[in-house]
Structures are given as C-alpha cells and as structure tokens.
Image (cartoon, rainbow, N blue to C red; front, side, top):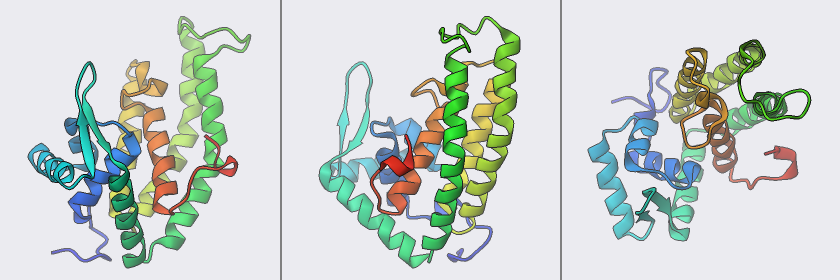
Length: 217
C-alpha cells in the first residue's frame, strides 16, 4: 500500500469519496460518467459513492434534458471538511499556496487568449474562417500550457489528485491541434477552458477560500 509521501502515488490514493464529492464541487452539475473520467475511478465505484451520498443527504441527482449530480449544502460542508483534513494530513498548505500564486500569474494571459479565440482584433466575433489567425492563438497557448502543466505536476507530488490536470490540459490541447475548435473554450465539453476553471476553483476550495477580485475570474 502506498504512503502519503510515496512519489509514485496516484489520484486514486486519495479517498475515493473525496474525489467524487470534489468533482461535483468543481463541476457544479456532473454526470456519473464524467465523474468517473475525472477521478480515474471505475464507474461502478462512482455510482456506489453517489448513491451513498444521496442517502446521506450530501448529493442529489437531477434528470431531464441534461442529467447529472450536484452537492447539497450539507454535501458542500462535508466536502470542505474532507479537503481541510487532507490539506493538514499531507502538510500541503505551502505547496498549494505556491501553485495558486503561479496559477494567478497565468490567469490573465489565458483570459486574453480566450478573448482572442472568441473575438477578432476589430471586435467582431471570430467565425474561425481565418485558419492562420486561429493557428496564431493556438501557438500562443503553448507557453501557458507548458507552465500550467508544470505547476500542476509539481503540486501532484504533494497532493496526488492534482495529477489529472496535466492529462486534462494535454488532452484538450491535442484535440485543439487536431482541429477540434470546441477544445479551446466551449463550455461543458472538457475543453481547455473547462479544465482551467476547474483548476482555479480547485485551488480556492483546497485553501478554503472564496473567489475574490484578487483571484480574477
């Protein structure tokens, strides 16, 4: 069995219950199969944890045109307690603070790239008809990508559950390079922007903070 300071630890060394509740907190409204992909847990394990969370009043499932799971207020409180316990047990406060500072230095440059992806220099909406323009934005994503992958990989050495972010960012970028335009900033499509927003909330939640003006958007 791996120990907390094992450098080969993986996200599944984290309490599976925390992983599942955490994905619900980050996504807000998440289908079970998406939780399974994000946590690396088998879907049957995820389903069992979700059903237990529902019985305990920590999560509820909504059905309709879009179906998914969401934390209840009690679920948010339980999730926050689990994060605080993990942070203390692993002695990870300093590592998360460092990662948060590095992330915030990248946040404005990434937001500017998203604006360029969505809008042309003249202020009109980018219809993605200019392949050279789109290619220039994707190219400029490269340095940001390298830095966010590096900072999350470092943090994963202390908190293994952050190991999913290098994979998520790389998968979205590879889709983008292959021509999938949704992979940049389309919401609810496992895009680069989706992963970015989840990481931002993850760092804030792990530190027990609410978003402020200093954190950007």
